[in-house]
Image (cartoon, rainbow, N blue to C red):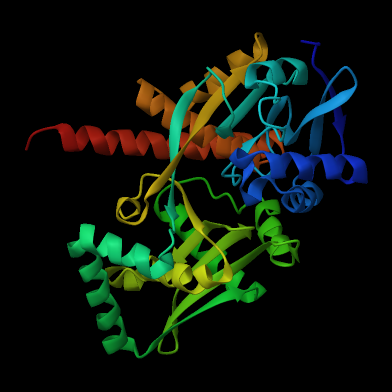
Length: 379
């Protein structure tokens, strides 16, 4: 096989022939059937994410793949990280360079991926989960899940009645693109990050700008929109999603914490699927598994890979030192800390802000470790 070469190009500098090749690769490769791989996503994110570009991989002068990415100092991440829920090399089936080969020719100090689509021996598996609607559509899916998990869904039906009795009739609207509603959601998420001592991914500015810009896109079946759940006059939940083709990707959910007992976010997800299925959406992607409710919803799954490829030398030492400073001891804790550091590094575009984020995250990790040790001591 001919050696791999790479050409780093500004995303807005790709010519129409290369965009046509990109689209042909997507059409031929079912593994890339996600809004995150669409040219429209790359074009918008490429305008907004600092230091964005696309790696064009070539063999014998022929284009064999594209990797949209961003740089933070010597580090490289997929474009729009830490918010990009699927990433990899856009290529025809069986022709994509491996992660190992790509990392070698890209030459970054480190390449960090959290949901890599494509084969690699590096890193570890992570699972994303989906609702796959069959021939029965939403009604068939709901009937099947309610039969299997009757207690869970009966509880949600009671929650719906309870919220209506307390606040008034419920209504759901989808396809919303009001910037004020998005600001409401972002404020909810930022409050959540503060309460849970997680890094505020919206503090850097460009991430919120990206969500606003994507709301303005509606072309070739690709777009972003929100759905909202009102009870009476009260907005109780908002969910921001990406959609393309028959794929609907739930991205940023938020709900009024005062209404948590009524599960407005879960009710909104169900109603969004009910309203969107007649429009041709067949897969509703809930991202990484983990939240308890997802097991009751999802009947499909994909395996992606999480890996950090380190170039030998000072960059690797610095990365491992950052994980150590954040408190990474034990494999599970090191994995959690590495993810926390990857999000900080991807969001923050200056060394000072990355250091500030690391210090804050270290304090949160230390406080969490102290709480765990207190709970483990018998009374």
